[in-house]
Image 1: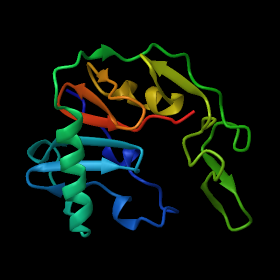
Image 2 (image 1 turned 30 degrees about the horizontal axis):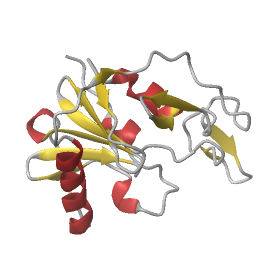
Image 3 (image 1 turned 180 degrees about the horizontal axis):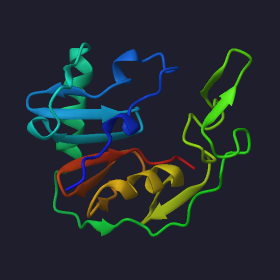
Length: 167
């Protein structure tokens, strides 16, 4: 099985939450998150992640994953999406030059996609660029947990969470 690039799910280097800029390990699980999307995989499959420096955040990540996967609601296949619209500012590259050299585009956060395109899964909406990003997770299925709680995503080799959009 091909390894997932966990860095793709972390906050970018411009994010002031420095503790989310790289994957971190807590109690045998490696987490990668940007605050909207979180990936959790077994640490033995992804060695080398550093222990989390902000203990309360790693405990919160574990608790959120546990809560999102509680209950026996049904998981659904991820929506089949065409590629979301490309960011107009960076023309889909995810990189812009703000007079001090190339860096992550501020308009799209480095994703290369327009931020405010949404897709519905049941009665919950999600940012299309995050649903599209999840396509790299093998066998991914999703269980929406309403408009106020993260959706649970189950995939071969791990679990993930995705915050809904409040539109």
